[in-house]
Image (cartoon, rainbow, N blue to C red):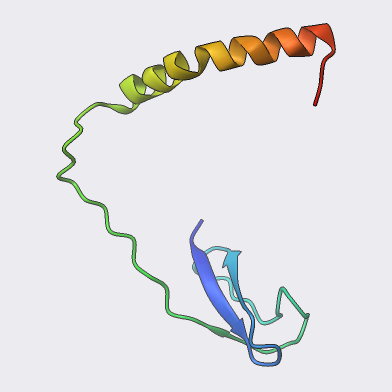
Length: 84
C-alpha cells in the first residue's frame, strides 16, 4: 500500500498514512483536526545496477548464518526461563 504524507492545517504537524490510491485523509492523526493537506512525496528510485548480484535467498541464508549463534543463545535463555 502506498504511503502518503499529510500536514495538519491547525497544528502544522506532518504525519504519514498508508492507504490505497483512491482513499483520502481529512483528519489529522496528531490532533484530530479536520483539515489536512497532502504533501508531495519523495519518489522511490530503484537502482538496477547493483554491484552485489546475490539473490534474496542467498542474502537470507547469509543473515541466518550470521545470527545463528545469537538465536541459539536466545533459545537457551527462553528455555531456562531467564528474561531481561
